[in-house]
Length: 400
Image (cartoon, rainbow, N blue to C red; front, side):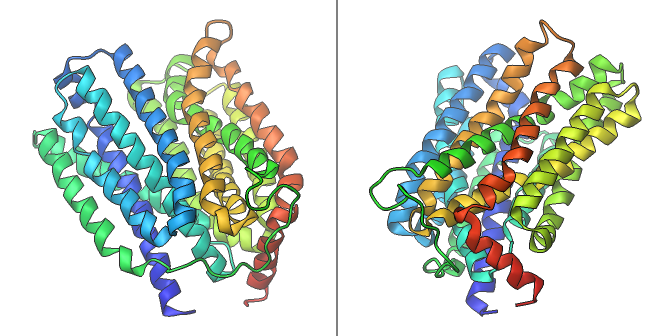
C-alpha cells in the first residue's frame, strides 16, 4: 500500500475525530450556555433547529465546491470554519447572538461533514476495500473524548468561552497539520457506473435521491434512539434516572463497536447485505424494545438497534460517492443533508405521536422505516451504482 494512501487515511481519521470532538464539546456545554444566555428550553429547541438549518446549508454549499476545487483543499477549510465557530456559543450573551453563533457553527459542521466524507470515498477507492465505517466510528470516539474533556472542564468550573476557545485553537491546529497528508486527487475508480441522467450537467441522478431517502429514514431511527431511549426506560418501564441513562449508553456503545467491525463484515458479505441485515437487525431490536416487559430486554433491544444501524449509513455515503466520482461531493451532500434532516425529524415526530399512542408503540414507526430499508437494500446497492464496490469486496476476499 502506498505511503501517501496510508497517510491520507490517517488524515481522514483525524478530521472525523475532530468533527466528533468539536460537536461533542458544544453539546456538553449546552446547559451552561443556556443558563448564561437566559433562554428557556423551548427557545433553545428552536435555536438548535437553526444549527440544523446551518448544517444543511453548509452541506449543500460544500458539496459542489468540493467537486470543483478538490477535497484536499476543501477539507481543511471546512475543519477551520467549524473549529473557529465552536467558540462562538461560549461568547453568546442572549438569544440573538446564540442564534447567530449556532448558524455559523452549523455551516462549519455541515461543510466539514461533506468534505471529509468525500475524501473518505477517495481513500476507499484507493484501498479497493471497505474502510468507510471505521471513519464514522472514529467520529463517535471523538464525541466520547469530548464528553470526558467537557466534564473535566465543567467540573473545574472553567468558563465555557475559555474551554471552547482552547477547543477552537486545537481544532485549527489539526486542520492545518493534517492537511498535507490528504490525497491530491481521487484515485481512478475500479468501474464508474453509467446511469441515464447521471452525466455532467444533467442534475442530481435519481439514484442519489433514493440513497438520500434511505439515509433520511435510517438517520431518523438513529435520532429517535438518541433522544428517546432514556425516556423510554424511565417513562415506560419506570427505571430510575441513573438506570435509564444506560439505554442511550447501550445504543451508542453498540453502534461504535459495530462501526469498528463493519468494514471487515462488508468486505466479506458486501454492502447490500450489510444494509439489508443491519436494517433488519435494527427493526428487530426496536421491536424487542417496544414490547420488552422489563429493563434487561429493553437494554438488549437498544443495543441490537445500535449494532444494526452502525454499518448502514456509511454504505449509503460510499455508494453516493461511487455513483459518479467526479461529482462525489454533490452526491454526498444530498445524502448527508437529507440524512441530517432525518436525524432532526426523528425526535420531533415521536413527540406528537406520544399524544395518541404510548411511547413504546411509537417505536413501530422506526421499525417500519428499517424494514423498508432492508427490503430496498438489494435494489439500491446491487445496482450499477455499486458495481465497483462489489469488485472491491471480491478483491478483499481474495486478499488483493
